[in-house]
Length: 146
Image (tube, rainbow, N blue to C red; front, side):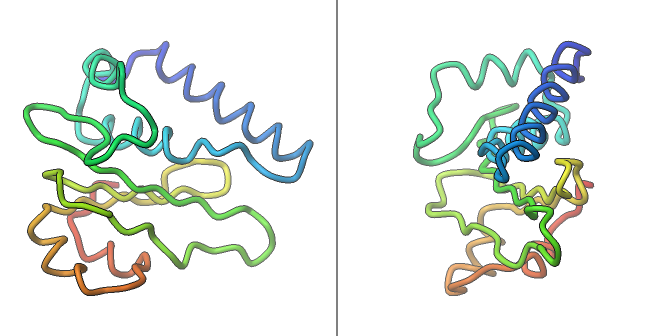
């Protein structure tokens, strides 16, 4: 359940980031926080529960990004720059396995979700532990959320 206030905050964040990009040529780094919020929404986490889970967390906290219904979620997100020919070819790899589910969110240049995929930790580790460089094709082998 996403409240109107949360949707409005998301829209404002994206609007400001895109205005900054138009003015100065590069967007502020909002993809991480946006993908964490969007991933929570995709799995049905109410915004109040997400807000509560995020209080006191930091951007560099090790292990997982948020928890919901007793499960820990690690989130990765990508956005092409919007420059001519810009496409996503690399997906950040999880640095640890201290989570239950990984969600990867791919945006377009306007921060609209294009697709999202979920992986269980054991399946992810089995599939990618020895892969040096992950691509979108790798993550698309998981469970599609969007």
